[in-house]
Length: 345
Image: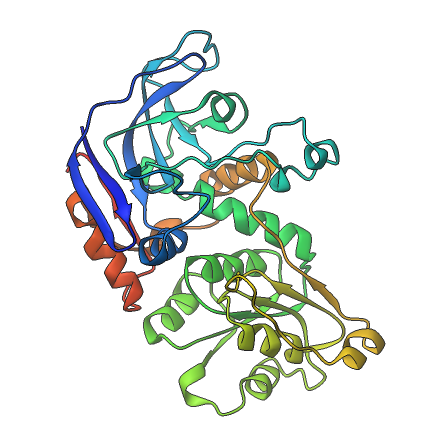
């Protein structure tokens, strides 16, 4: 089969490799649709200690497809089933699973290898986080289930409600989906970014109430407050960039009693500074959300199937496996939101 293999940062190759054998409890999925992802871009640039543990390794983790083979003991699925699989599943036995914090599972091994014609889905993910697709849902739309699940979890934990003023910093696919789900909750949403294409997408896809071009303001905090007609600050700020200065900007933009959600992950060892008086006496909630739980993966698929979020608007273009590296470079240059990868041409 054809597969994109990761050898080292900035060294990936589309090549012929053996179709993997199916083990007990596993399924072999013929990949029909896969998606590029910001995490894959970061991995391409500098590697990833969790996603890439051996070399060469399969690459990519957002996909949907058709069950090609089933291993011994698989009862939930049969050959020909149309499925979407998460890139992880909790063990159900560790300290965090015992507390139902499944996203923090100590044994949360992540599935990789979606940029290929076939992928093996491990037993635990088969049992806990692989779903049958609704009959009329396309593979292309279903491939968005994994990234949207992160946002479903984030919106749930943030507690966004109708009438809230919500700011979004950063308009990659995650920021755009946060904006869309906040609008579906009935919030007024104000999005800030540097890329004019992504600012327009926030209007067309998420129907945000206003956008702020970060290249055209000297004071982003005041620009966001002015756009939202919220001189005291916004109710909720969600940071989707992952830069220390943007974390600090998000904090500065909320009102007393507001919520700051730091979704964008900064580099390891990063430090940020906050006004402790504002945090304490302002009764500000500061939070982060990592990954998702099985329930969010299911909610995500249902949301896509409902038609309430047109995920296909986030597709920049369609490519084959041989063009994955070119697509990742387009992401780095700021020219892409998500590429749809079709392994079979």
